[in-house]
Image 1 (cartoon, rainbow, N blue to C red):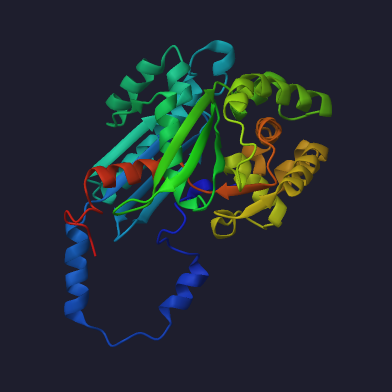
Image 2: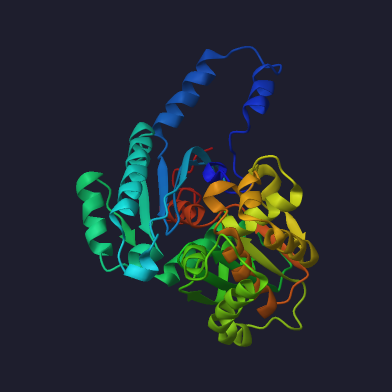
Length: 373
């Protein structure tokens, strides 16, 4: 699956080439040189922001500029690097994984320079948190790439995911559990109704959160991700369930209406893509879509019945996720059993969008302090 198309829903974003071409030939008003000159000058003055998320599995970047109430993505990058490959066994980031990460980070640096980024936040998550040589890796990135990575704690990771996904909360929703299934850890956040902000996207109301040190990479390495039997699958579900049991008891949603799960990560977007039968991953159909419990169960059963080669051949999975997707399904199954809901909403957004919103809000771009028009 190509994650490069990820950005926040409801934000201006370049469409596919065919759609861009259709716009190009659409009828336009007569060319107004002065109007275009003023637009170029305004763009030149605009602050350009960047958010980089270096995870256990992926390296992702978004570059964006503020709009009246949100932001517009002007560049993006995503690559599966498997920084945490072998970490659970050795406790260290391997040289091969570090090399892949440094190469991807150099591309991100060049993109930020080319876009004249003036404000950035660059975070690293579970792999760097737990690795014995995480600090050494951070120093190496600073020396070789010139980027200063911030290794964030799990609470910050949960807060950023919530901030990025809040626009997908239904206004009347009383009970929502946000889940973010990562490569090395997974976060669950109990959210109340979103709070309206005087400017920009709504604010999350976090009622509770938990982070477990299990993600698709760690789980797949422990149990195997190529040949997964129903028995192995249930063992993965049981391990995750043990980690989230107390959180589920504390934050049960019985009696609340409506209740649903809101999921962000490659697992849930992959499941949505397979369910929709997409010939290739397309964010426009994924972000904000709804799936029923029955539909998710059906896709999980189909994936479990597939051979590794069949998963590789699926255009929404591919070779990079074929050995990880069932571990992700097992994590999701544990969450669904802990929080039985008839509906799941899929978010193709997360930490990077949360970082962008947080930086722009801190700079007052939506509070009348030089906010763009």
